[in-house]
Length: 442
Image (tube, rainbow, N blue to C red; front, side, top):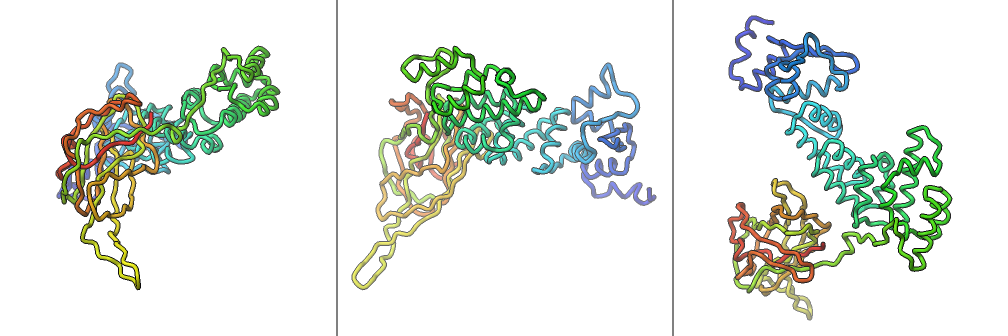
């Protein structure tokens, strides 16, 4: 090392920069790793690793502490260097290209913050045709939010997800999570067709003949989550009966169910997709008054006593009573203009679970309530705070007063509690302001 660098590398450097310099130049390193398939040599400091990971602390200081070089064959050297960079500097970069490897390493070394960052990246794939893959990853690494978002997407796009290349690689446990849902947006025939495909794939993996007996053993008890009485009889007779995955008594009971007999083995209740469920409207205001001219962000926190699907919000729209008229040869038209608003829904971790831009027409007179339908439903977990945020209200609008802090919808039996949102500084609270009500399904 250059003599000048021995002293100058500390000058004007913060702690992470100094620590990274020591790592990269192997200054006072006291542990050596052989990493990856090629057993790449990487040196580090026991103190730093133990300070960030309980696994490394046990590795160095436990009753069976490691001596000499430590071999880590299951993590590639690039990923291990990225993890070391996080240990020494708190800096980490996670992308779709490295998230799988980073998640494995974070789980192995109990790095909760890195797992959360990985989950944030993976959530992008949860809302796509790769949702089944995201569900499997979420289940494997106990990422509950990723599981939930993946299931939400699968429920709303079931047929497309089951046709994806990743679907047949689902574990039995993940497949069970899907089949337990009452919200799947496909026919029971589609589900049955996929199960046969999945069962054959499991037999191929086990190098077994795809016989009825082998497929049934692979499928196991999740077979009883399939609602065979709702499967098209033509498909059932041609594909299911010939597959021999059902016993003779089970097949007879399903045929009898089409003539009014109840099948004791298989449920017949219909799955009702979220998009087709009844929508309830719950209003919180007593009167409408105004106008008010706040143009900043307005927000309100709420929670529900039951799990619901939030499908929209009623707002007090902006108006422009001074808008000019367009003059034609014979027709004078009032043109109030439009305004672009943004609506977001945040969970109790302040993570954005929904965002939508919408152009709405300005009216000439205030005092109305306008329904804003969401482009996709938002699953709201019971007894958990969510905050709805409205931005872009650049014109005057009326607002609700005599608002109720707790409102129960008599039809659905759902009770929603409202709370003040700390971020709101523009007049919306539990007593008055924006957000006339919510639209939801159960």
